[in-house]
Image (cartoon, rainbow, N blue to C red; front, side, top):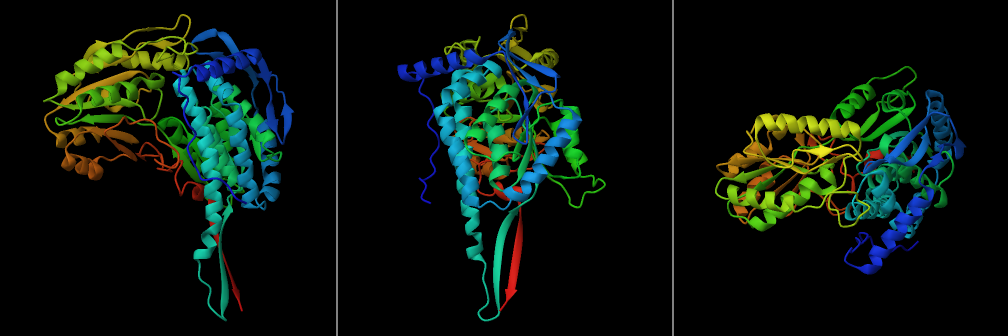
Length: 518
């Protein structure tokens, strides 16, 4: 079957009146169904439990986005049985057919693009460009993984047979049932990517979306249903993380766990998945992305305007709620004062408010828990460094924290080493580029980083010594593109499982060799 070449989904141009109109129409569609109640989906059937979670708009927490039934342990067990049954047929479905489901889902998402983006604006607090990019990335994952699965089918051609002696076959086969635990900060893109990578490889899925963005997860289930995915292949079981999540991870029939979230939860999953439970006949595989403490380094020979712009956009886009966000700027002393002044100036010019208004660059943080955590780190920062912007917020109507900058940070300060996951930037001064690299690596994370420099020798030094999974030169450290910048990091940032890369699907499969004597 002929398919068109992979191309990334274009981003919306919000200077275009037609694009603005479409997004506003998307908001109206979402407003037509906010407040509705959503069931679990197990074996293609709707299940109501009576245990309701209320999802609210983080920019206006009095506004209910949806009410979602929550799974019990029994529901999770039913979902596991459905997934096990579905696996016996789905694993034998041809790769082309599985890929076709993804291609169809991508086409459906394109038609509903502005609705999904608008829903993320409402339920996740994403400003228009951030939500638009999230939807585009979801489409990219579907298109890319479909093609990658087809490419892996060709691996057998690389295996040799021996004339008049034996015929050899090499193929990838699916693992089994996946426990897919997704994050709230990319509630469509990462959810779609993690789920559909498992599905297109022939696995079946127990899908637990992040607690604050469950409506988005349900709406993606609508897409999979319309795309023709058989019942039981993906089972939607929103629920309490410590209860349902742990049950999924610990279950002896779970074959692998795909997780994106915090370091602490990731460590717990890794530990629990390593235990061989009664009735378990395999070692569980863990695919994990767990966070970052990402830095932009500014050399003394650099485009200083580019440096300031990159720092501000990477630090405060989506309120700093990205594992790839710039939470540290490490600046050479020769240009420190100039870059700092420009960063402060650009930050104070940012517009903050309800992301439904396209003119607002930055919206709220996700919930009260996040608001309280970020606020506590701001108080820590006030004792460690010089507050030069922000430092305040309000949770009266929504969970808003002003973009906050701490200058003259000690290299070993807590705000320089610990993940805050909010609009808080720590800035430190260094005497040399070598020292900048040393400070950048002085954290337990290793996800993304960027270097702003015209010095080729320094760029090459960073290429070798800056220990992150995704390193960018002369641009910001956020915004990895599927198929172009495979995404995943080192150390406590996870298992370096490169999402959107050529070998990602192989993590969801195992290889089998068949040799027939002639």
